[in-house]
Amino acid sequence: MIKVTGLQKRYGRFTAVKGVDLEVRRGEVFGFLGPNGAGKTTTMKMVAGLLKPSAGSVVINGIDTSVDPVAAKKIIGYIPDRPYLYERLTGREFLAFVGGVYGMSDEAIAPRATELLNLYGLAHFGDELVESYSHGMKQRLTLAAALLHSPLLLIIDEPMVGLDPAGAKLIKQVFRSFADDGKTVFVSTHTLEVAEAICDRVAIIDKGEIATMGTVDDLKELHTEGGGRLEDVFLKLVGSPDEQAVISVLRDDRGVRA
Ligand code: ATP
Image 1 (tube, rainbow, N blue to C red):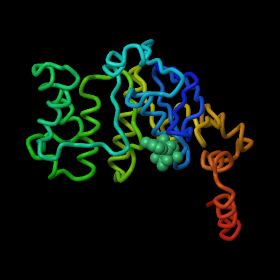
Image 2: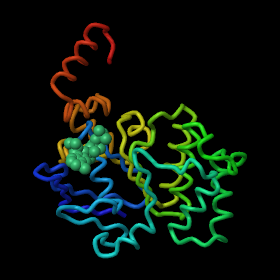
Image 3: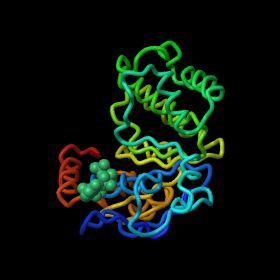
Image 4: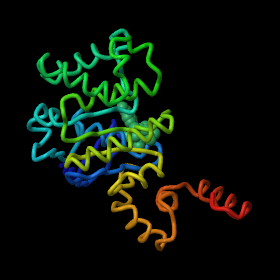
């Protein structure tokens, strides 16, 4: 579903993404992990067609995004790390606006919007202004907007920020059922438990380069002789020496794993 080859992004003299190669298969939830500033958002924006690569290519379901960006965007639902919602629209108006941007007809938008508002517990709030929504409701509306045009690929940058346990559970269920339907989820997260719980495979990026990639079990086997957690793999590969020292002290002092 996603084939990224030699992807690079330079900001002036600084290279944020240094030749990333990735393949994400249909039916997969693929996690993209890395420390702050590693290049996750930059890579995801290039995959979603929102940022022009300095070099390399992105092919989505056989469509080269540099050749036919509009066709690629039609099959992508993208949720940025800081989604923007029009607060002075109602939830239903917002969905109608987004559907229009994706070229959906009013006849197609109305029933789909109702279906998604019902599905995400917003049925009674569809005609309320977005500004009156709680953080969790806004995130569910953002998800509804990303799924409105029935994309084949969902790209989500940091979906778990500020979600309560029920919201986090819902998101995990949405990702799993979306992938189980034969579609694809490409998700970045700092929450390693989430990656461990829902991702079929993960890639860890550090300083613009892929440090490792595989199933969570493969990575544990490869980097911690099988006994560790994903957190141990992550810290071993990309944690600063300071972080590693603090964690090992915590483990020794408390006699428990940090
Ligand atoms: P985080 O987890 O903190 O969101 P990230 O892995 O998503 O980080 P990016 O936002 O992709 O990282 O940033 C990668 C690097 O590129 C960082 O060093 C960042 O400062 C730099 N960067 C990002 N956008 C720009 C820009 N528009 N101009 C210059 N540098 C940028």
